Image (tube, rainbow, N blue to C red; front, side, top):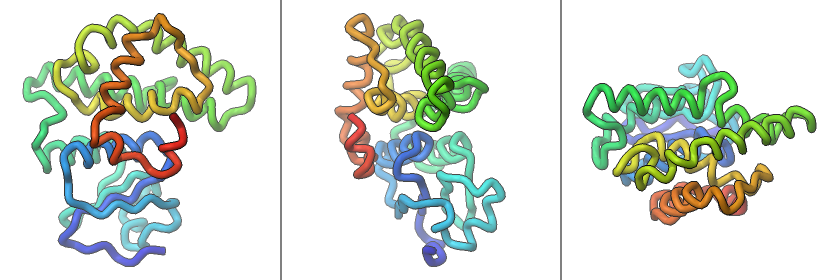
Length: 209
């Protein structure tokens, strides 16, 4: 069990191998946020933090005396608290679209994150079904990956920081999109080549790809 966090520092408690935690680490690295990052299991967190997170979930952020959980809350807070580089657009319509994409990919019923977790943790039948759905869903969106350098954007956004951990795990998940998915491979390579993405990887994640 860790000791109480330093109240003057930004502290992230996260899983070393879950996509949600990876996305938050990617954002923190992209913004060069000075912080303490602990990759651990939920029961290894300080008691003071656990008591303030009723969901008992990772990632959990401690900053300015606040305890924040839920990946979307954490990522948007970091984007506003550390505004450079911005990862959400200022325009309310564009911002709402990005929020919907994040919901669609990471939290909606049957979302890509849920499918990936089913592939890893479900029984054989569930895993095979999830693998087919995830693969076909990615292939259906090839035109959007080809449309602009980042997902429906000329600049990197929070959407990309959520997609990168999933795409990094495709090989581990046993998903081969094939040559027709070249736009997805190119898009992923742009993200993976960023120093901030490489910095966000834990030792176990480095072995996934």
